[in-house]
Length: 331
Image 1 (cartoon, rainbow, N blue to C red):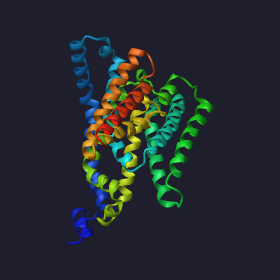
Image 2: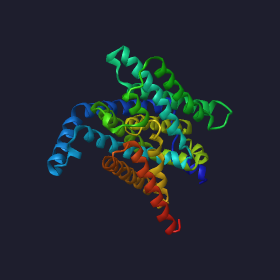
Image 3: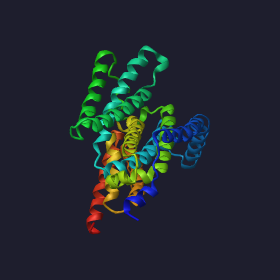
Image 4: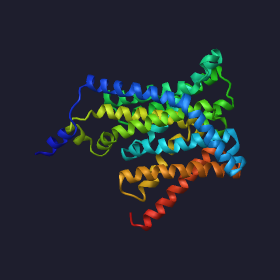
């Protein structure tokens, strides 16, 4: 049997209607389950975990409410960003995270502007999520339907999203500490509702990647073979970009729009220096992500410097250490 035939048998074709039906049939119940968890189950679990941690450690660093929210948000970012980043880095799409972060910042500015006029709509991360998703789909459409270079839509979103944010802020939003927290990152300004949103996004991203890992891995390393196997490459490309948009929005308030791409790329790059296995590197990149987040928070507290920047600096230090180890191992 020819290779293309074996691939076709491994990945039987699905019509768009069938795929939409599967997505709706699985996605709607899963979405309801995630919403139920973050609204009713997660808050008491959160209180119980940090209550036990505080009473056991007895240290102010883990007993302060704002740092508890920051630790939780950072840990979630350290999971989701390297998971999605593993596919991006191996496909040489590292700059997409930066472009979507700038687009999401434009959404934050719009959300702050609308929230100032209509207080019931004061939820800038929701606007950031919508803007990043639209930007992700827009980049994919431009890349598929134009004859330009692949980095053109990235450059457009990279500058256009930031331009929208600056224009809206200059028009009617005071450049306050709230805006700065989304631009530069500030772990002290993470409200509990944003932590709940990050929990939901983490569950969604992890679930989707688990279900589509085989297809995402296929299109990452052999796109032509994936087409021969009748995998809808455009669909999974779009899915990966949308997942990246979700992760970027989740990470913005801790790392800021300027630094958020670092957590998508650096832990993965560090893992690639010490292992040649994709799955092993995926797990190791999450470990590096956790070390960068927790180490960055502790160093930031000890030295009284910006947390987002410190997390990225610790991640870079891990990368340099992994690079040295990889060199010694002859990789």
